[in-house]
Length: 116
Image 1 (tube, rainbow, N blue to C red):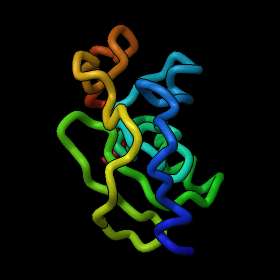
Image 2 (image 1 turned 90 degrees about the vertical axis):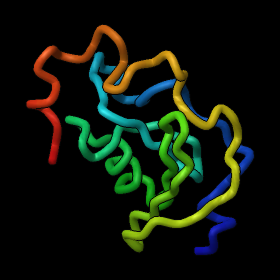
Image 3 (image 1 turned 180 degrees about the horizontal axis):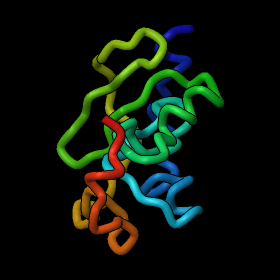
C-alpha cells in the first residue's frame, strides 16, 4: 500500500474530539486523527484507546497527532514515526479545548485511569 493510499490530504477530520467518546460521554487524554479517512480517536494512554481500535477495525494504518502544535505521524503497521503532508484543516482540536477533555467529562482522578 502506498502512502497515496493511506494519506488523504483532502479529507477533513471527523470532529473536534474522539468520535466514540463524544457519542458515549467518555473522555480522552490526547487525540489522534486517521490520515486516510479523518476519524478522530483517543490515544493509547486514554481509557478507551479508540484510535488504535479504529486502525484494527478498518486497517487504516497512519495517524497524525490532533493536538495543537504537533504534526507528527505514526504508522501502526510498521510501528514507526514518519513525515507526511499537511492534512485538511483543522489540524488539531480547538485550542481552548482542554487536554484531557472534553471539559466536564474528565473525572477528578483522571490520572488513575490512564493506560501506561
